[in-house]
Image (cartoon, rainbow, N blue to C red; front, side, top):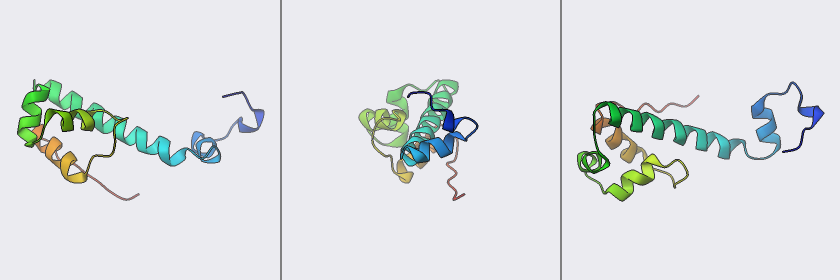
Length: 95
């Protein structure tokens, strides 16, 4: 991205919205944080991907998709299973 002085002092969200990528960027950020949190919880519990997938009653390929923020969208049900497998709860809210 080229430097544009008109963006000096604006909020990042304003810039992303102006570029038409705010929603996409926000979705990626949320998925990245969830994937990171799950990976950290797995590490803390010393769970392998195979063990995590078994606890979720799903395939390792599905777990890989959940842990990859660039991969498609995971369902709330899948995220709840992942959270439960690491002893956590999923909290979703409208803001």
